[in-house]
Structure formats: structure tokens, C-alpha cells
Image 1: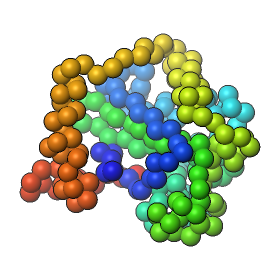
Image 2: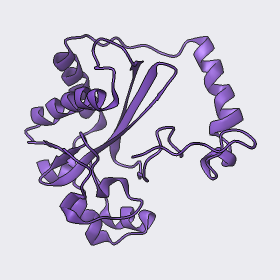
Image 3: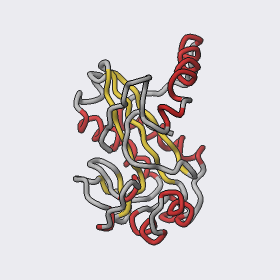
Image 4: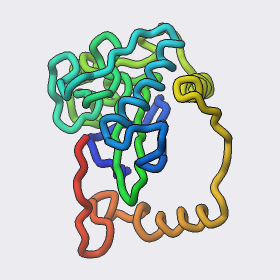
Length: 206
């Protein structure tokens, strides 16, 4: 699928996708893009530390393991994305509009390098050299339930908040269905990157 944040390709398999949506001027965040990345990354770092890992926060957009791979998101970390052992384990992207930001990302629980390489059109050895997973680092499987719980607790403790479970309101469900029918379910958006007839979607940086 085409993400509203733009960026490079991600194979959504054996991973947990997180998303954070808030007012851009919310007091928990800093009001600018890099500051928001820093706050959210700190929460994910805490979750990984609770698993016994020592994650590194990328300081600049350099290729993991020094190996650039065109189009593959996990080949090169952007600032405030996360590495373990010099290889990318969590990729994130952010978009802002109307005074609200969306930041979402993918935290790899496991991976089949050969399958990922086939989908991305890159060498399997290069995928293994630039990307790592929780299973590889811990020597065991980490289920989505365990990972979701750790992330929730890390966000709560790092930000000093308590998260409440909820669901979409009837109005939100109606809006979701309309957007899928009119935009996000259409090839014009997913394959061509065009939001509306005659309108080109603006590209976003990874």
C-alpha cells in the first residue's frame, strides 16, 4: 500500500506497525518534526531495552552497514530511527497537515531475508547485512501481543501517561469507509500516487 508519509518500500510481514497521531503542538511533543521523532524514538528504545537489547539511535541518514540499497526502507536509517548491532530494526516516517502529525513505523520481529530480497529486488546477503530482527537478536520469537504490551508500557512510563483503549466512532467508521472507496482503495492512489483525478500526490522524504 502507499503510505501517506511516503518513504521507501516495506514488506509488512512478521513485524509490528505502530502509529502515533496527535496535535502538532501537544505538550508531550516539541512542535517540530525532529523533536517528535526524538520523543517517539525514546519510547521505542525503552521497549527494546526491556527486552535486553542495546538499541542505537541513528544520528544521520547513513546506510546501515555502509551498503546503500535503492528503494528498500531498512537499508538506510534516517535520523532517530533505530539500529541494533549497526543494523536497522525499526523504521519510521512522519507527515504533518492541518496542525496534526502522524508518525508510524515498523518494528521487525522476524524476517525471511530471501523473501524480502525477492520482493524488494535486492540481494539477500545485502538484506541480512543491513537489517536485523528481534528473533535474531534475542534468539527467540517475540509475539505481537508481547511486543504490543511492551510498547504500551514503554510509552506510558516514558511519557508519564496512561493510554486508554478505544474504538472508532460511527462518524469515524463512515469516514474510513468513504476514504477507502474514494481514495485509498483505488489503483490511482496505490499504483500512481494520485490522490484525486488530475492531482498528483506530493512525494515525502523517508
